[in-house]
Image 1: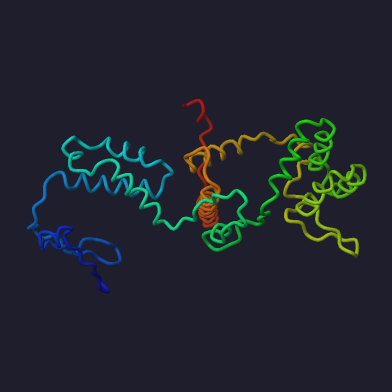
Image 2: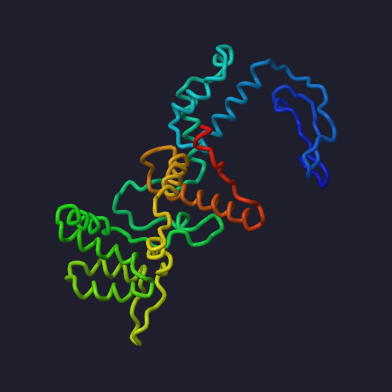
Length: 294
């Protein structure tokens, strides 16, 4: 129990052995105000290790994607035979891991590939900002697959798609003109692609011949100045972040809901780094000769 000034702690064996050992700590700083009194319960050296084992099991169950068998195997490593003898059988520990994960209130993965929509809890960040901008719903996968087949099997179609992608290398002021010229030259089979590009990067044309603001402005993806000024165009930064993402997921094929939840968690971590930088904390700098030192 707690008061306005301190917290009272009692022995974990109070109910079993009626142990009256107590400890007082400050409610603000958690400093020990009164050291623990003498224990009257009966304990042995194995109890602490078994408790640490249980805490490690619960921690891995909540914060990793490891299968229950792997969690149990890793947690067994630090225990002696005497401690292992006091533990429940492996199946019971694995069942406990599954129960802990069920209590996390994570949205169950969809069993039907034609699920209707993304759960609302996975469309917002930790701070309730909009995270998932668009849910295309069922049916888009077959359309995308059709374009993928044409892209892989029809050279002319893939060449024209490359033309559309090359718009990012034009001057920012010429991108709209280049988009309009391509939309006239190419046939109707590319209309869905042009609609997506226009909605996302160019902006829909209004009745007064002006364009509304797209989802991503042209300056967001321009490559003209990077090319003319011989700036770095490699994907080293993307590869480094890809490695970080792999370490976060800890598995090769997560379910869709787990995938979105991990991205939301990573967005929160990135937001924290941005806040630290804005508050004046310098970002971590790499050593110039770090590669050679390794």
